[in-house]
Image (tube, rainbow, N blue to C red; front, side, top):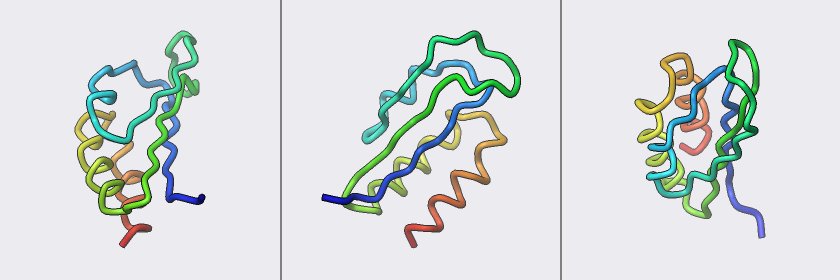
Length: 80
């Protein structure tokens, strides 16, 4: 079975447990020291209903650093 998915790489971002309060979010944290430019983890979201993905991505925007907003909005546009 193939379902639409989104992966958000976490680059130089501190861990935010509020991500896990959202439906569909699966966190993979690498337990590395957070430094600028260093990949420290990623978020995976998958669901058969793209409206659920879009809603969860929208809820993630304020929980991520501001520089992630344009990438998240780009991902949302792919489900329209």
